[in-house]
Image (tube, rainbow, N blue to C red):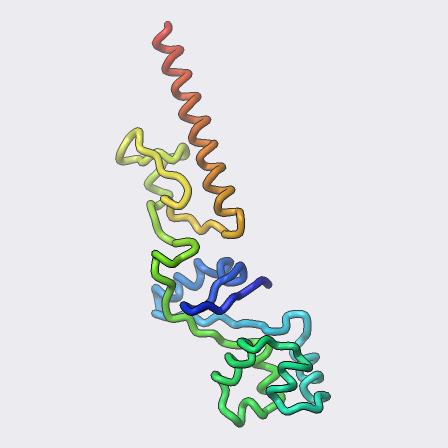
Length: 181
């Protein structure tokens, strides 16, 4: 459950971000990913079908007035279905509950809200120091970790920074103590 927003480049939102690692894996393996969208998550498919059958409107008006679908949702459905499929009440109910959206690529990095990739976590120790280059640290989005967006990403990055600062401060204090002895 969550929000999915249609943009010029495709789709984004917390519902999509939660699936991003699976989408990226499918894109890498198959050059496309299919996400099933439920346009009416509060209703079962049977309830949607019942509402469709009881409606006294033509299909487009029924989707708008009875099911309260947004114009973009209706446009997606109409674009994906043949006229026969659109007029088939059972098939239409199934699509309202399981709309297959094909994803063929990710947004360009300069337009991305969040990115995947970065330095592999296996390349840093438990203090975020690069194993191959001592005294070089990587935190936040420099690392390849699937951080959730919506405030959690910034919190994760800030928490890593605080942890690293505390670690470096403790190491500095130990070094100062050793020099004093």
